[in-house]
Length: 465
Ligand SMILES: Cc1ncc(COP(=O)(O)O)c(C=O)c1O
Image (cartoon, rainbow, N blue to C red; front, side, top):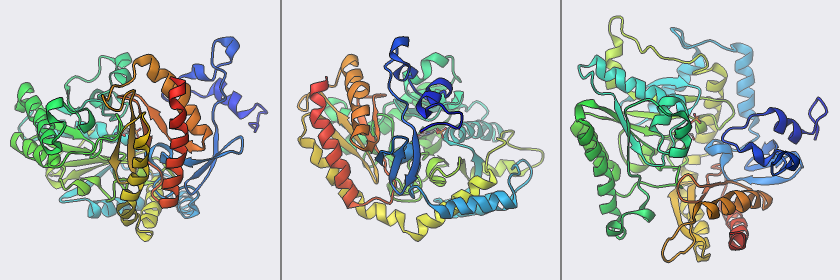
């Protein structure tokens, strides 16, 4: 396929596009020292299937990037966006409002748990996280605790790339080129039960209490009068889907209340049915002070992110000359809000929450069949969101060294999965994992199909170490 200028798409992409988190040497010609691969160019989507510029099709096993809940090709959303663009293309939310932002804020506030009634729109997840940290700082300055500014998050967690959100991110390789980052961000252990300390491997609840207590300990170490917020995903994505152990969030909530520290539920991936409920804190029964989210709110038809804050946090902003001196030109763009409203209409009409709740066990069971393969160490996750951790030795849980992980993931798995017709992600930000988060519309036939494709690729993996 050619670009309008006549160059093959893959070459124009290689020569002009700067792709995100991408090793461009993969696509450089071999005579320039590269691997000479073609840039994969995705040109079309329908339901849970995507097509590339070679005409091949793939199961969209990652919903783009944990984004597309209702599937591709929903003309209903496209039409709502077109209508909105014709009626009012743009107006900012800086001292003004527009109908779609109002509609959406009201709808999200009524779906959110407890008193999370105030919606601050951004254009994506990192900005939502950034906004939440700034709000936490300002809230405490306004309410007589001005030294509360530090934040706590978990190791290997990803919270975005703005320099505040990146400071919260717990992935050293994503941060080291940009140090120094925003000071005041501290890390605690995540909830990877498969890699729990030896003494806690048999008791998930005890592990959960131990992990939650590390948050209390970090608050004590830093001084409770300096800590503003804890940022946690309901199910941590990076590292390969770590669900919360039973009782974990209950204990975290207690700790946050004890020290007057805000609990931020970073649901950039987990909201809008990914785990089952509209907001994943409801799936695990905890009440956050702030939810940050993005991605699935529009199913990717337009960019949008948001922070949902409690009434308590908004209270000081009702008075006098006080304002939150923070915002984004595109935050709450009318066309994005129209896309979100149409997306949520589909979500509700088609009962996608119930569909995920009813079918999550079947999805998991299909993936669990892979545990007979020696390379599969652990299958974990919840809802329509799973990680498969790969190991060198199932018995000892020994993982791969850096060279082996490089050969396995980049050399073999990523291209092999794609060739097998499955777009998903092989990731080694923690231990090597395959990540799956398909559109929420898929069902048992696709679960088996995904498992069969994974089986064929993983069966062959050992030969490529
Ligand atoms: C939990 C979490 N927080 C924040 C972000 C950043 O979102 P964005 O890429 O929209 O800035 C992501 C992105 O994947 C995420 O998974």
